Amino acid sequence: MQQDARVNPLRWILLIALWVVPSAARAQEASTDIPMDGRPLTIQRGNPAVTPAPSMQLPDLTDRANFSAAMQIIFLMTVLSLAPAILIMMTSFTRIIIVLSLLRQALGTQNLPPNQIIIGLSLFMTFLVMGPTWQRVNNEALSPYLNGQIDQRMALARAEVPIREFMIAQVSKAENHEDVFLFYKFREGAAAKEQPTWGDVGTMTLIPGFVLSELKTAFLMGFKIYLPFLIIDVVISSVLISMGMMMLPPVLISLPFKLLLFVLVDGWRLITAQLMGTFVT
Image (tube, rainbow, N blue to C red; front, side):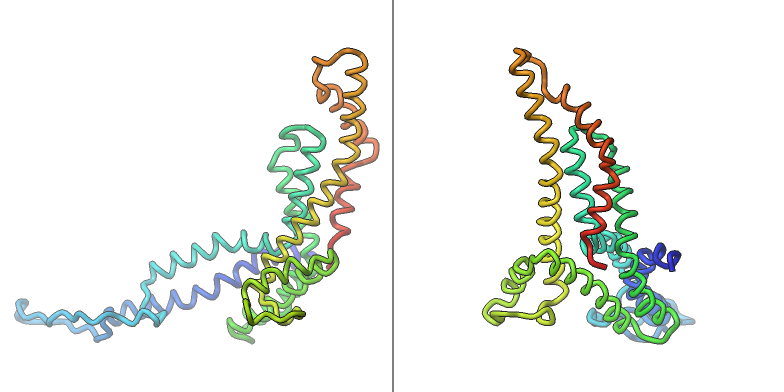
């Protein structure tokens, strides 16, 4: 089960890409058999001066088979480039990366730990938190599709259910329903219900509401992290002023004390445990 959970993020991106690949193959086959005007190719033998009159009829662009293979490949690359960003916005990554960034600022260590370490730790924590959700996506949508048991539309519909349930659970635990209903009322306009249910909220409306909820939760956690370090800065500043050392930067003196306090209380373990414990899986 652990092995499947590690590879599921890449396989879920593959599920989005598989919507484009079959149509690209069909377009490539169609382009080798018929021209854009839809007439069969004929090879003229004999007099080379006799050529058929060119047709000015435009192809039906609503038919995906009329798109060239190059356009299909460009669209595939666009989907693959946007898929990671979309997945990040629908997972626990947003909350984790913001809290760890605020922790680094509270410590006052500038660029330590480096951005690569912060992002890498956030990604691995996201994989652990999202493991059960991605496992459901793999079992209910991706594996049946790859085995030919369901079509593409059914696979995408099934994959959407666990992701929606995860986002709804986080919003409900944080009691940030108003963030989601804000986008719901904006999209529905006059047709919006006074007391909508989660079934009335579409996925495209749920995603920005979920992001707002995660931002609010992350900043609240960052405020709590800042408080003990702020107290240390205030104490150090008061001591330096009372000693007449006003020209000495307080950060230069408070940084070792903040690092010592953070190490003594095993801060990295406490922050990580608190972060992962705030999610409902």
